[in-house]
Length: 272
Ligand SMILES: O=C(O)CCC(=O)C(=O)O
Image (cartoon, rainbow, N blue to C red; front, side, top):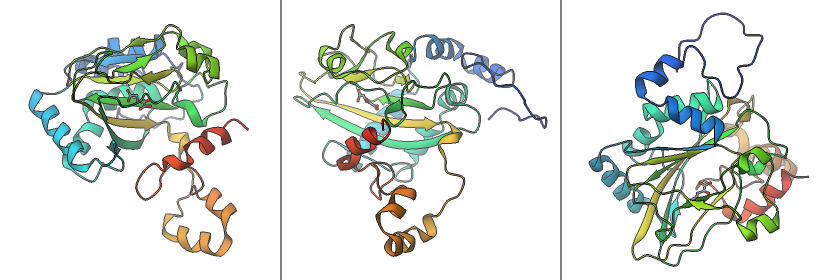
């Protein structure tokens, strides 16, 4: 994190501006262009972010922990997941995109085989109502352990969709108008903000596409108080509404990571 001066800021830095404290870090790491792309396009690729050995070890660790197409809650499962989450270039891009003091939201993985279906067009601001705020809330960093191309099941992106600052409609989800594959080599990290519409192409090539998904969120997404120590007792005594208040009525943060049976309900809740 860049040094925090002991003065009280009364302004807010524009979403596309790199703070003067972060700028030297961004320049030293060579990620200024990535910051610009995130600000203007909503996505960027960090090519060759790590060595081939690192990405091979990450791929093995993901496969070791994956069940039924992926895994969640990986941060404390292997030191390599810590290294992905704390990668200096990602930390700098996250500070730029989701602000100083940003949080780790998840470290998950996906393994897509030939014939794996696509996940459907969405914006990662999925549990925010539209219009989305001008400052990004969620930054997703996908570590490609295998080459990305359309037939290999690359992430699909709709360039320019971030400017809509809303969720895609059902028609837009079906038509995928203007969609392109993100093409990159294994060892690259693809990052996008919460506004841009994306999905993935169904994999038609043999083999599998292994990806580590690291998400960072803006500090304001965190509750002020943390009741995890007494959560179970409070919910047992007070029921469903207490479960909702303490975050047990959504797809986020179940003991095994995301609980996808509650995904639709969570995304719908954000829009009513
Ligand atoms: O797996 C992909 O290519 C897309 C992943 C995705 O949609 C996400 O992490 O939000």
